[in-house]
Image 1 (cartoon, rainbow, N blue to C red):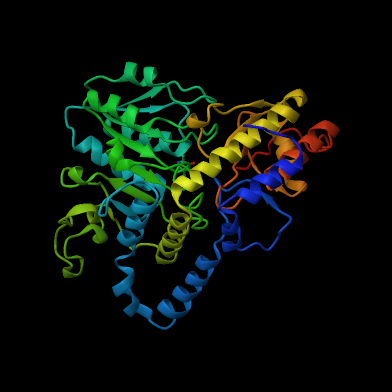
Image 2: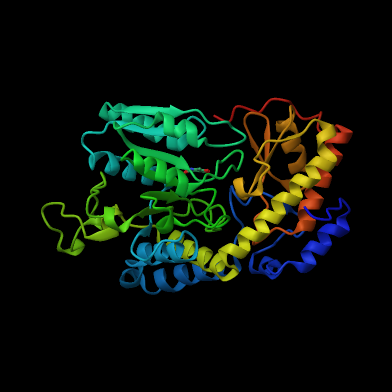
Length: 420
Ligand SMILES: Cc1ncc(COP(=O)(O)O)c(C=O)c1O
């Protein structure tokens, strides 16, 4: 960072110049003292979303009752197009808001395998998010396919070389995260997609940690398929529906495995056999979550208003600043940066490694700073650009420094409790 200064006044100066600072007031803030650096787990509640959900519940459901389905039926596509246009670089008709990420990975991976009968290998990486690996493991077991895991460094992210080495003409699908959930390492989507295409396989990208923080160019990068969640940077709330993307040219070749009535052509004819609707609609399954889809639409609209390139610019500055403070204050207290240092290789969050990370996370929570713990020994900090101020990053890091230096966390049991 140019002219970096560890004094709080430096953060205040960055806040004064921040063009996005007014967006903070577009969120509900019941506790103004809380330092929330966890927008990549669950984003905060936008004021407009709160009002829109109340409207949907009170008017559309309460008064309109079943008559409201006329407008609700279009929501999965409508909200999908909003995400496509504002956040992930996808032209209309390729994104749907539906189901969960887990289910959408299943749907798209099965569809990709079925479309390439001579190919029986799926590739992912050994540090991909658990649900991705588990779903692919299940598909491989059900179908007698091979799941090939490429090794990924947990702090620096995917290696193009390892991927290229694992590819051959048996590979049907490569499923990868665009931003790694633990380290925040950002993959080069266009370059990796090119490598996969040279081997004749399809790509499926998990955008959970990039959508809303990093500009994504699905159409321009040549990506085939993608999924993402909406409860993180899109701020659509706990359990809000996920989204999926299927490149236009592939939509008629791919058939997803869950043949539900919302994916049926002429749904309300209630025909005797499944006949998939044309286009992206065939990737729907059953009745969509309407309240959730409305929240997705509002969340994407709000981010679109801020502008994804402006959000990325601020996010880069926030994470650079956080790393500069970590280097200045925390290195001597046993911390190490466990994320790529090159800003262009990093998404919206930063991980710090420390032997007592679990206790430090609990102590931070006790001190009013919300962060995440991730194994092994990582503290994950996500300053969401639409919400987080530079002063808040300074305050959060200052409390972490104080807790680590004073060892005030040592009364907390060192082991993460078994949550099962
Ligand atoms: C990269 C990634 N993929 C998938 C998921 C979760 O998927 P689901 O919404 O189906 O629980 C998460 C959740 O944190 C995630 O970080």
